[in-house]
Length: 338
Image: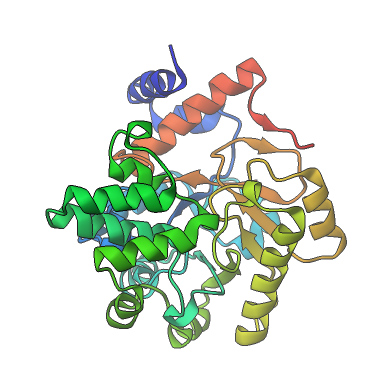
């Protein structure tokens, strides 16, 4: 049975086990679920990338968390460790406008704190994340019948052959951070205007909205400058992306706590990086995306992705608990760094 088959089997199995028992016996007191956006009508820059949860789905997730956990504030992680009831710490990545318009009103109504991790280079809609650019291009291609000639041009721009990919969608989704020039050129020939989209749709938080969130006691952290995959850039660039993004939000918004969430993932990030971060006191806590895995790195906390499938928060968390128990039994639930 492959990895995906194992996950599917454990997900089905977890549905037969009460959540209270999984929480009790998994040995994981606190959980860190994270999202990007909540929107019942996902915008074009998101809908070709992942399953965006609706407002009703998100509220259902929150109700489940609140039934079994106390809502926690990441500024009080060490204090909350002394509580009898386990905590859930809610975070959101990318600094999207849904945070202000949809998410924060729901959280305030339910009394749930949260942290929002923001890319400093995208605040005030100055620039668009390269993966969101790809989603916009795909949305344009899929919404209109584009010629085979255009698809051939796209393959040529990327220096790829058609037989290397199932279709042009797979090709576009394979493009990476260092290929943004190619992405911009593809957008031009496909008739997609990123600047106009940023101006009209305003997908990111504005400075004024961030100030409002801060005044409402939400936590603001950094998420790099422009969202590269850390395992694919040099350690020098990793440090620059981390430090400069934190310095920017600290200076602009007077933030004292240095919290940083890795874009994409911290998988492949070396022990040397974390030693530099800790020695220079660049970040107080950092956050990865490897579910409930234990991390040998001091103050690097793993979070649970909540948008990787159509599972509800209840199904996702129960499955994660069961997977954790199996991995622990096999000695595979700890992240070791070189």
